[in-house]
Image (cartoon, rainbow, N blue to C red; front, top):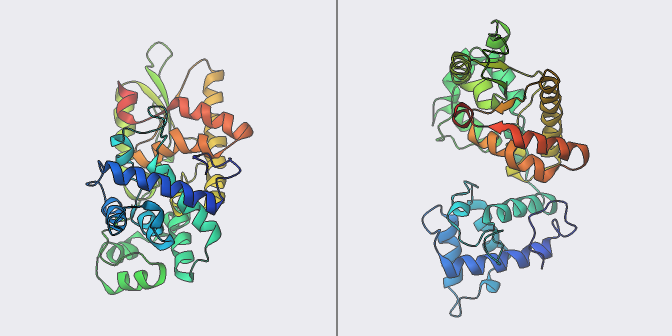
Amino acid sequence: MTTTYDPFHPKYFDEADLRQEMTRVYDLCHGCRLCFKFCTAFPTLFEAIDQHDDQDAAKLTTAEQDQVVDECFNCKLCYVNCPYVPGQHEWELDFPRLMMRSEQVLHRERPRSRQQKATDQVLGRTDLAGKVNTTLAPVVNPVVTSPGSLGRKVMEKVVGIASQRVLPPYARQRFSTWWKKRSPLRFSAGARQGRALLFPTCLVEYHAAEVGRDLVRVLEHNKVECSLPAGQVCCGAPWLHAGDVDNFRRQARVNVAVLADAIRAVQAEGDEPAVVVPQPTCSYILKSDYEDYLDGKDGDDAQSLLARARDPRIHMV
């Protein structure tokens, strides 16, 4: 058994090794139960083990182990609550990372239905969906924002997105379109309080462009000079959380290259920029996952990006 959350470890994608690690972690979680209240994954896990008189986690079936994985949505609240995380305890327990590893191993080892593949493609290709649907926003939004409607039921059948799920409308003007039509404020070296490279995220770019506009106005009001590096794509979170490491790495390499070049360009002018990300999931991806899943020069650039990625509130302090 290998206790590892390193995707470059030779045993990381070994399913037999993964199953042993799942048994170890499930047994520890069952004995602790501190996270019973966070999501259905933990009650499901505890009930599955409790059905055995000796409460032996090794007796869980593969299907029972995988049901826990299916019910985890990687909010990471259990990690924040856990007293046994790496660096703090010898058990080196990182439940969210184990769930991600499980998704990634199962993505490689299990056949996927046509609907699962369709769902992965629709959710993963956020830039394609965003570009099309913002162009057609007046037609698309009445369907997207009507839970239970015929259009949503068709969407559920085709790509597996629940018809009752509340979805955000698409913006009629993308954030990057608004950006191109304005003249960004420039400040003299003496007046400027900082430099911000914006990573707007899919949510701001295609859905909530007003959040990006307000962010720019607040930053510029505080004399923080903003720029929007061209060539950015979705952070890749939908691919990563579906277990598709290869597509996630492709997305990550694009963003790391774009942002690393932008960082170096600002540094050549004598400033140290921050990469400001207005959405927490994407911010976490930039701060943590890029470094974990990239190596070589990409990995070095990801570390540089990690050192400069900021949430808006942190950047303003």
